[in-house]
Length: 127
Image (cartoon, rainbow, N blue to C red; front, side, top):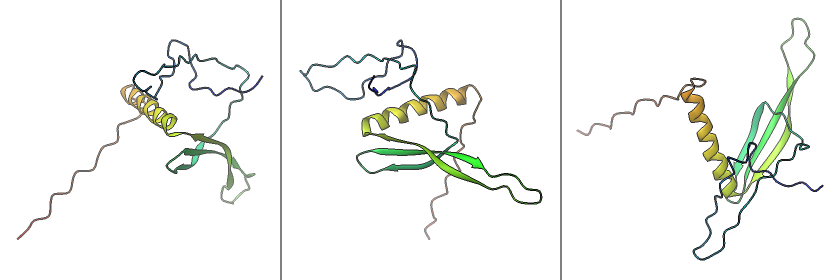
């Protein structure tokens, strides 16, 4: 079975919206989400890199592994790359929009607090 990209996990009642608008008069495609239960999942506990080069958004996720603990010694560890995700601009915008929706839901549920903006500095006085 060849791998197929998946756009979102979840039920088919919430299909991934098409972020590319079809030109006027062009036929639009109907995309059906097909889940793959055998797909490997990757655990990460950090985002170690985020780069947009104008063509793709590259996100590198990392996983931290701690060294054996020794008495009277500082805790040490290493961070390894776990996964690199590369998205074209349309998929990056879709990811940003979905993350904003999740952040709003978590804020509304009280799981996270909305960041408060620092007060704006008064304009400089001119003599």
